[in-house]
Image (cartoon, rainbow, N blue to C red; front, side):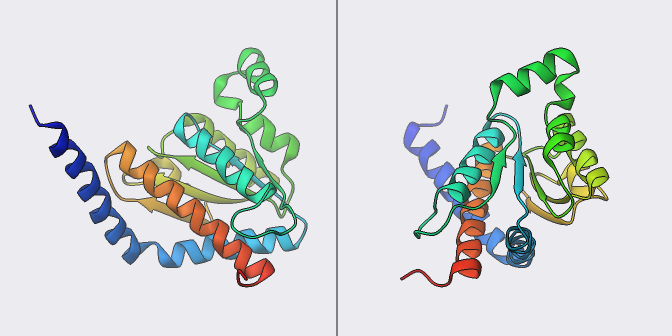
Length: 197
Protein backbone atom coordinates (compact mmCIF):
# COMPACT_ATOMS: atom_id res chain seq x y z
CA UNK A 1 0.00 0.00 0.00
CA UNK A 2 1.35 3.42 -0.93
CA UNK A 3 1.90 6.09 1.67
CA UNK A 4 -0.30 9.22 1.65
CA UNK A 5 2.65 11.44 0.74
CA UNK A 6 3.38 9.17 -2.25
CA UNK A 7 -0.24 9.52 -3.39
CA UNK A 8 0.06 13.30 -3.13
CA UNK A 9 3.30 13.41 -5.09
CA UNK A 10 1.94 11.02 -7.73
CA UNK A 11 -1.18 13.15 -8.29
CA UNK A 12 0.78 16.40 -8.46
CA UNK A 13 3.52 15.06 -10.74
CA UNK A 14 1.00 13.37 -13.01
CA UNK A 15 -0.91 16.66 -13.26
CA UNK A 16 2.29 18.54 -14.11
CA UNK A 17 3.19 16.08 -16.88
CA UNK A 18 -0.33 16.30 -18.34
CA UNK A 19 -0.28 20.10 -18.31
CA UNK A 20 3.07 20.09 -20.09
CA UNK A 21 1.71 17.77 -22.76
CA UNK A 22 -1.50 19.80 -23.14
CA UNK A 23 0.55 22.97 -23.59
CA UNK A 24 1.90 21.36 -26.77
CA UNK A 25 -1.40 20.17 -28.23
CA UNK A 26 -4.20 22.49 -27.07
CA UNK A 27 -3.16 25.97 -28.21
CA UNK A 28 -4.73 25.78 -31.68
CA UNK A 29 -8.02 24.16 -30.63
CA UNK A 30 -8.38 26.59 -27.70
CA UNK A 31 -7.87 29.54 -30.05
CA UNK A 32 -10.38 28.05 -32.50
CA UNK A 33 -12.93 27.48 -29.74
CA UNK A 34 -12.50 31.02 -28.41
CA UNK A 35 -12.92 32.44 -31.91
CA UNK A 36 -16.18 30.53 -32.39
CA UNK A 37 -17.47 31.65 -29.00
CA UNK A 38 -16.55 35.28 -29.58
CA UNK A 39 -18.23 35.27 -32.99
CA UNK A 40 -21.35 33.80 -31.43
CA UNK A 41 -21.49 36.34 -28.61
CA UNK A 42 -20.76 39.29 -30.93
CA UNK A 43 -23.72 38.21 -33.06
CA UNK A 44 -26.07 38.12 -30.05
CA UNK A 45 -25.95 34.35 -29.87
CA UNK A 46 -25.65 32.32 -26.70
CA UNK A 47 -23.56 29.46 -25.39
CA UNK A 48 -25.37 26.40 -24.06
CA UNK A 49 -23.32 24.01 -21.94
CA UNK A 50 -24.01 20.47 -20.79
CA UNK A 51 -22.40 17.50 -19.09
CA UNK A 52 -22.96 14.93 -16.35
CA UNK A 53 -21.58 14.79 -12.81
CA UNK A 54 -18.32 16.75 -12.59
CA UNK A 55 -18.88 17.89 -16.17
CA UNK A 56 -22.28 19.29 -15.14
CA UNK A 57 -20.47 21.31 -12.47
CA UNK A 58 -18.01 22.51 -15.11
CA UNK A 59 -20.87 23.54 -17.40
CA UNK A 60 -22.42 25.58 -14.59
CA UNK A 61 -19.06 27.05 -13.59
CA UNK A 62 -18.38 28.18 -17.16
CA UNK A 63 -21.84 29.71 -17.59
CA UNK A 64 -21.43 31.52 -14.28
CA UNK A 65 -18.10 33.02 -15.35
CA UNK A 66 -19.65 34.33 -18.57
CA UNK A 67 -22.95 35.61 -17.22
CA UNK A 68 -21.34 37.30 -14.22
CA UNK A 69 -17.62 37.97 -14.72
CA UNK A 70 -14.26 36.26 -14.93
CA UNK A 71 -11.33 38.52 -14.09
CA UNK A 72 -12.55 41.86 -15.37
CA UNK A 73 -15.66 43.95 -14.89
CA UNK A 74 -17.64 43.82 -18.11
CA UNK A 75 -21.21 43.29 -19.28
CA UNK A 76 -22.71 39.85 -18.76
CA UNK A 77 -22.44 37.40 -21.64
CA UNK A 78 -25.20 35.06 -22.81
CA UNK A 79 -24.56 31.57 -21.48
CA UNK A 80 -26.77 28.88 -19.98
CA UNK A 81 -25.95 25.56 -18.34
CA UNK A 82 -28.51 22.95 -19.37
CA UNK A 83 -27.88 21.20 -16.05
CA UNK A 84 -29.18 23.94 -13.78
CA UNK A 85 -32.97 23.64 -13.82
CA UNK A 86 -34.00 20.58 -11.79
CA UNK A 87 -37.66 20.90 -12.81
CA UNK A 88 -36.81 20.89 -16.50
CA UNK A 89 -34.26 18.09 -16.36
CA UNK A 90 -36.32 15.81 -14.13
CA UNK A 91 -39.51 16.32 -16.12
CA UNK A 92 -37.70 15.40 -19.35
CA UNK A 93 -36.03 12.40 -17.68
CA UNK A 94 -39.38 11.25 -16.27
CA UNK A 95 -41.63 11.91 -19.25
CA UNK A 96 -39.26 11.10 -22.13
CA UNK A 97 -35.87 9.68 -21.07
CA UNK A 98 -32.66 10.69 -19.31
CA UNK A 99 -30.92 10.45 -22.67
CA UNK A 100 -33.01 13.43 -23.85
CA UNK A 101 -32.45 15.81 -20.90
CA UNK A 102 -30.06 18.02 -22.89
CA UNK A 103 -31.31 17.39 -26.43
CA UNK A 104 -34.83 18.55 -25.55
CA UNK A 105 -33.43 21.80 -24.14
CA UNK A 106 -31.25 22.34 -27.21
CA UNK A 107 -34.35 21.87 -29.37
CA UNK A 108 -36.26 24.41 -27.28
CA UNK A 109 -33.53 27.01 -26.74
CA UNK A 110 -30.91 26.55 -29.45
CA UNK A 111 -30.94 28.78 -32.50
CA UNK A 112 -28.71 28.97 -35.55
CA UNK A 113 -25.61 30.91 -34.54
CA UNK A 114 -25.59 29.59 -30.96
CA UNK A 115 -22.93 27.24 -29.61
CA UNK A 116 -23.26 24.02 -27.62
CA UNK A 117 -20.35 23.29 -25.29
CA UNK A 118 -20.59 19.50 -24.89
CA UNK A 119 -18.51 18.20 -21.98
CA UNK A 120 -17.85 14.49 -21.44
CA UNK A 121 -14.81 13.05 -19.70
CA UNK A 122 -15.34 9.70 -21.43
CA UNK A 123 -16.62 11.17 -24.69
CA UNK A 124 -19.34 8.53 -24.61
CA UNK A 125 -22.21 10.07 -22.60
CA UNK A 126 -25.43 9.19 -24.47
CA UNK A 127 -27.30 12.33 -23.38
CA UNK A 128 -24.41 14.58 -24.45
CA UNK A 129 -24.21 12.83 -27.83
CA UNK A 130 -27.99 13.29 -28.24
CA UNK A 131 -27.55 16.99 -27.46
CA UNK A 132 -24.96 17.24 -30.24
CA UNK A 133 -27.37 15.60 -32.67
CA UNK A 134 -30.04 18.14 -31.67
CA UNK A 135 -27.56 21.00 -32.03
CA UNK A 136 -26.58 19.96 -35.54
CA UNK A 137 -30.25 19.74 -36.54
CA UNK A 138 -30.82 23.27 -35.18
CA UNK A 139 -27.79 24.84 -36.85
CA UNK A 140 -26.01 25.21 -33.51
CA UNK A 141 -22.22 24.88 -33.64
CA UNK A 142 -20.56 22.41 -31.27
CA UNK A 143 -17.41 22.58 -29.17
CA UNK A 144 -16.58 19.23 -27.54
CA UNK A 145 -14.50 18.94 -24.38
CA UNK A 146 -13.43 15.33 -23.81
CA UNK A 147 -10.84 13.05 -22.26
CA UNK A 148 -9.19 9.73 -23.08
CA UNK A 149 -9.33 9.26 -26.88
CA UNK A 150 -12.44 11.45 -27.29
CA UNK A 151 -14.60 8.42 -28.09
CA UNK A 152 -17.86 8.97 -30.02
CA UNK A 153 -18.12 12.65 -29.07
CA UNK A 154 -14.65 13.44 -30.36
CA UNK A 155 -15.40 11.64 -33.63
CA UNK A 156 -18.89 13.14 -34.10
CA UNK A 157 -19.14 14.77 -37.53
CA UNK A 158 -21.11 17.67 -36.04
CA UNK A 159 -18.29 18.81 -33.73
CA UNK A 160 -16.68 22.03 -34.97
CA UNK A 161 -13.86 22.13 -32.42
CA UNK A 162 -12.61 19.24 -30.30
CA UNK A 163 -10.67 19.95 -27.10
CA UNK A 164 -9.30 16.60 -25.97
CA UNK A 165 -7.34 15.80 -22.81
CA UNK A 166 -5.43 12.65 -23.79
CA UNK A 167 -5.32 10.91 -20.42
CA UNK A 168 -7.10 7.98 -18.75
CA UNK A 169 -7.54 9.42 -15.25
CA UNK A 170 -10.90 11.12 -14.71
CA UNK A 171 -9.57 13.46 -11.99
CA UNK A 172 -6.64 14.59 -14.15
CA UNK A 173 -8.92 15.09 -17.16
CA UNK A 174 -11.36 17.16 -15.12
CA UNK A 175 -8.54 19.28 -13.72
CA UNK A 176 -7.51 20.13 -17.27
CA UNK A 177 -11.10 20.71 -18.33
CA UNK A 178 -11.50 23.51 -15.81
CA UNK A 179 -8.15 24.94 -16.92
CA UNK A 180 -9.36 24.95 -20.52
CA UNK A 181 -12.60 26.67 -19.50
CA UNK A 182 -10.70 29.34 -17.58
CA UNK A 183 -8.43 29.91 -20.58
CA UNK A 184 -11.50 30.28 -22.80
CA UNK A 185 -12.99 32.83 -20.37
CA UNK A 186 -9.77 34.85 -20.51
CA UNK A 187 -9.55 34.69 -24.31
CA UNK A 188 -13.19 35.77 -24.65
CA UNK A 189 -12.71 38.70 -22.26
CA UNK A 190 -9.56 39.87 -24.02
CA UNK A 191 -11.10 39.56 -27.48
CA UNK A 192 -14.39 41.28 -26.66
CA UNK A 193 -13.30 43.83 -24.08
CA UNK A 194 -9.53 44.32 -24.36
CA UNK A 195 -6.66 43.66 -22.01
CA UNK A 196 -7.22 43.62 -18.28
CA UNK A 197 -6.31 46.99 -16.70
